[in-house]
Length: 511
Ligand SMILES: Nc1ncnc2c1ncn2[C@@H]1O[C@H](COP(=O)(O)OP(=O)(O)OP(=O)(O)O)[C@@H](O)[C@H]1O
Image 1 (cartoon, rainbow, N blue to C red):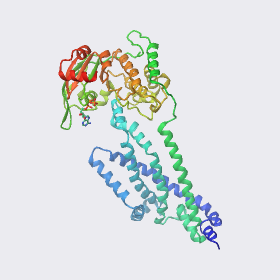
Image 2: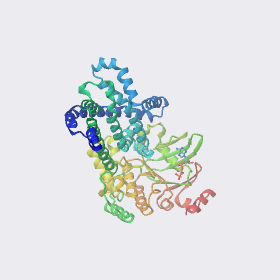
Image 3: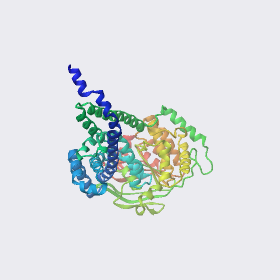
Image 4: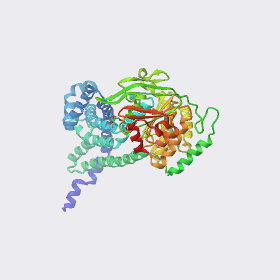
């Protein structure tokens, strides 16, 4: 007999394969899928609990999750399966009857949970900090921001790794036969192995191997395709030049002529609050970032904060909506101290726009704007949508409401972020270097929008390096250095008649 014939008889004996095929399908495949699906689902539940524990700030919550993960990831799967399957056999019999099958699922889940927990944790921690900050700035509580934005984004990022885990469970399910499964519970491997003994060749086992590959290989490719699609959504190609964007915005402004009490392009009537900051101190550990900052902003005015890098401008802004907590001093909105308010209630009154936009990438432009209206303000879906459409139209994005952030230019993204903050009708708006991340030709559109907003009655505090903007639109300009307000006054006083040598030097470098 030739080598070819010997190999064919051993591995590809069609008769042996045909004989085992019905059993392979009806018993083996069914049981393998039940074992793998059930243990992955239970593993996902265990993994999610472990991941949430693992990112807790409390060490006593993190520690048990760590120990669990180390133990179940460190032990060989077969050891865990035997320890659980045989160690708990008596209890298992009382609960589940003579079948060791449920204990097999439990053992596989405990192992999968340890890996899935680490996968989830890595995914959640890979979501940019700005996403949670944006949630909090919109008035969401920490758990709500995690549930609605951070965890779904993190989980989506690790979808391929989760599928790998499912594939791992399909393969590990072949170890469960060590528990002595009943004939009706045999999985693919066991069916193949038993028949191999009967037929005297390896063909039934080969067929089991082919079944494993038929399940796992296409699955990997399908999930990679789904992952790619989820990552970007349906891409819309819209290349708009920055100059075109400015024209669009100008048209929006002209298309909404001012009514009584309403400004061009921003028909929403806004009532700004008066802001008083009194002797504010803030420190990161021992490092004092703000030192006795005091300043007032009348309702409906624009205050531009300028100063060198590291002077504490962003920190001051973050104290105003309590993304950073001051050490001492006071902040008052219309005379009411914000330090006694619940932060999420305060943030419904104080909107914030960030340098990096921090839009939610999985949501469209309109989805970004309506989310907090629904989830924070509790408005109906229809009402949230109506308001979101209005706000987006006002910032010149009526035709791009269904675009995802990835399909918008930086300037358009920043305008969505402004619309998102405006939708909650804040009394005070904070802008943290909102044009610094934009290409130069996109800056003008955003600045023009902010200038229009400033005329609408909104109180605005704007941290900016755009000196021309500050000179043109600010009611007052505040110069900060080393955590202190060094000089504050009208744009003319600050830019044309600076008093302190530090401001003079700063301006000579900036202008
Ligand atoms: N989370 C933090 N932990 C520790 N130090 C921080 C933190 N955030 C900011 N700082 C430090 O606090 C100081 C003030 O930072 P802040 O961002 O408020 O300054 P800034 O004037 O806004 O600067 P820039 O214009 O560069 O953003 C800097 O020295 C910065 O390194």
